[in-house]
Length: 122
Image: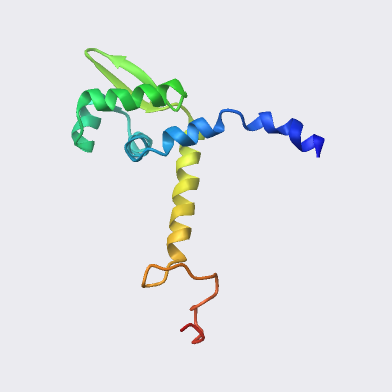
Protein backbone atom coordinates (compact mmCIF):
# COMPACT_ATOMS: atom_id res chain seq x y z
CA UNK A 1 0.00 0.00 0.00
CA UNK A 2 2.78 2.46 0.85
CA UNK A 3 4.40 1.66 -2.49
CA UNK A 4 1.30 2.91 -4.25
CA UNK A 5 1.17 6.02 -2.08
CA UNK A 6 4.73 6.92 -3.09
CA UNK A 7 3.75 6.70 -6.77
CA UNK A 8 0.99 9.32 -6.55
CA UNK A 9 3.35 12.27 -7.31
CA UNK A 10 4.03 10.66 -10.72
CA UNK A 11 0.70 12.06 -11.97
CA UNK A 12 1.18 15.56 -10.56
CA UNK A 13 0.15 18.13 -13.15
CA UNK A 14 -1.69 15.74 -15.43
CA UNK A 15 -5.08 16.90 -14.19
CA UNK A 16 -4.14 20.47 -15.15
CA UNK A 17 -3.60 19.38 -18.76
CA UNK A 18 -6.97 17.65 -18.83
CA UNK A 19 -8.64 20.65 -17.15
CA UNK A 20 -7.31 22.97 -19.85
CA UNK A 21 -8.23 20.54 -22.62
CA UNK A 22 -11.67 20.06 -21.03
CA UNK A 23 -12.78 23.42 -22.42
CA UNK A 24 -14.56 22.93 -25.75
CA UNK A 25 -12.98 25.96 -27.42
CA UNK A 26 -9.45 25.03 -26.36
CA UNK A 27 -10.05 21.48 -27.51
CA UNK A 28 -11.13 22.86 -30.90
CA UNK A 29 -8.01 25.05 -31.05
CA UNK A 30 -5.78 22.05 -30.35
CA UNK A 31 -7.63 19.99 -32.94
CA UNK A 32 -7.29 22.70 -35.60
CA UNK A 33 -3.60 23.08 -34.81
CA UNK A 34 -3.21 19.32 -35.19
CA UNK A 35 -4.32 19.81 -38.80
CA UNK A 36 -2.11 22.79 -39.65
CA UNK A 37 -0.22 25.78 -38.30
CA UNK A 38 -2.51 28.81 -37.88
CA UNK A 39 -2.23 32.40 -36.72
CA UNK A 40 -4.51 34.05 -34.16
CA UNK A 41 -6.58 35.83 -36.80
CA UNK A 42 -7.18 32.58 -38.72
CA UNK A 43 -8.24 30.78 -35.54
CA UNK A 44 -10.54 33.69 -34.69
CA UNK A 45 -12.23 33.50 -38.09
CA UNK A 46 -12.57 29.71 -38.13
CA UNK A 47 -13.92 29.51 -34.56
CA UNK A 48 -16.09 32.61 -34.83
CA UNK A 49 -14.71 34.17 -31.65
CA UNK A 50 -12.77 37.37 -31.00
CA UNK A 51 -8.99 37.57 -31.33
CA UNK A 52 -8.61 38.44 -27.61
CA UNK A 53 -10.57 35.29 -26.74
CA UNK A 54 -8.34 33.20 -29.02
CA UNK A 55 -5.26 34.80 -27.46
CA UNK A 56 -6.53 33.91 -23.98
CA UNK A 57 -6.98 30.26 -24.94
CA UNK A 58 -3.60 30.14 -26.67
CA UNK A 59 -1.92 31.68 -23.62
CA UNK A 60 -3.25 28.85 -21.41
CA UNK A 61 -2.28 26.18 -23.94
CA UNK A 62 1.18 27.69 -24.32
CA UNK A 63 1.68 27.86 -20.53
CA UNK A 64 1.21 24.08 -20.38
CA UNK A 65 3.53 23.62 -23.38
CA UNK A 66 0.72 22.14 -25.50
CA UNK A 67 1.25 24.65 -28.31
CA UNK A 68 4.22 26.63 -29.53
CA UNK A 69 4.44 29.99 -31.24
CA UNK A 70 6.43 31.06 -34.30
CA UNK A 71 6.55 34.81 -35.01
CA UNK A 72 6.56 35.75 -38.68
CA UNK A 73 6.30 39.43 -39.53
CA UNK A 74 3.24 40.93 -37.86
CA UNK A 75 1.69 37.53 -37.20
CA UNK A 76 2.38 34.74 -34.74
CA UNK A 77 1.70 31.23 -36.02
CA UNK A 78 0.79 28.46 -33.62
CA UNK A 79 1.23 24.70 -33.88
CA UNK A 80 1.20 21.77 -31.50
CA UNK A 81 4.24 21.63 -29.28
CA UNK A 82 5.05 18.01 -30.04
CA UNK A 83 3.73 14.59 -31.03
CA UNK A 84 2.59 13.85 -27.47
CA UNK A 85 -0.16 16.43 -27.79
CA UNK A 86 -1.29 14.84 -31.06
CA UNK A 87 -1.31 11.44 -29.35
CA UNK A 88 -3.63 12.82 -26.65
CA UNK A 89 -6.02 14.08 -29.32
CA UNK A 90 -5.93 10.84 -31.33
CA UNK A 91 -6.52 8.63 -28.29
CA UNK A 92 -9.39 10.86 -27.12
CA UNK A 93 -10.95 10.77 -30.61
CA UNK A 94 -10.64 6.98 -30.79
CA UNK A 95 -12.21 6.62 -27.36
CA UNK A 96 -15.04 9.00 -28.22
CA UNK A 97 -15.77 7.12 -31.45
CA UNK A 98 -15.68 3.77 -29.60
CA UNK A 99 -18.06 5.08 -26.96
CA UNK A 100 -20.38 6.34 -29.69
CA UNK A 101 -20.63 2.84 -31.07
CA UNK A 102 -22.01 1.68 -27.72
CA UNK A 103 -25.17 3.78 -28.05
CA UNK A 104 -28.34 2.31 -29.48
CA UNK A 105 -30.72 4.20 -31.77
CA UNK A 106 -32.48 5.77 -28.75
CA UNK A 107 -29.18 7.17 -27.47
CA UNK A 108 -29.06 4.91 -24.42
CA UNK A 109 -26.05 2.87 -23.45
CA UNK A 110 -26.02 -0.82 -24.06
CA UNK A 111 -23.51 -3.45 -23.09
CA UNK A 112 -20.94 -4.78 -25.51
CA UNK A 113 -22.52 -7.60 -27.46
CA UNK A 114 -26.09 -6.59 -26.65
CA UNK A 115 -28.24 -6.09 -29.69
CA UNK A 116 -25.55 -7.24 -32.06
CA UNK A 117 -27.13 -10.01 -34.05
CA UNK A 118 -29.39 -11.29 -31.29
CA UNK A 119 -33.06 -10.66 -30.65
CA UNK A 120 -32.89 -10.67 -26.87
CA UNK A 121 -32.98 -6.90 -26.47
CA UNK A 122 -36.35 -5.47 -25.48
